[in-house]
Length: 163
Image 1 (tube, rainbow, N blue to C red):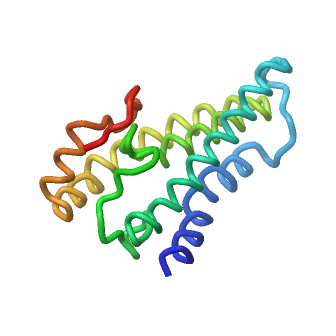
Image 2 (image 1 turned 45 degrees about the vertical axis):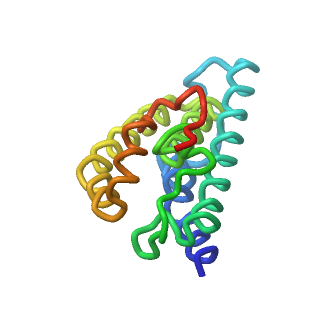
């Protein structure tokens, strides 16, 4: 059940945020002319998209495997997930989705996607502080507090947390 719910949420969450949203903002997947066409930017964009998708897939799988649930409140985890990318940063899925959007901006030469990624992160940062973090604190108590103190929300640690 968790795997199915995670797949649906993956399509509805990051799929819309990094797929449909950028497609609508750019009017399709055509390459723009708003940035210089340099091979380096294309490579960096492709790396960001690939890395972001990899982190997303592994994070969603970790929720199903380690947390016995999904990232969505509709089918929440039974345990606090602090494995995988969560050992480095508390919001790896948000950062990964933002990386995909920025990568698409570089691949498509569309700076509007840089603004979209910035707005995405700002919105999620606000929502996280307002609703998500208090809900996690209430649900998981002291273990979440210890995790929150040790692992940064947005800038990854150099070394994985092993708490």
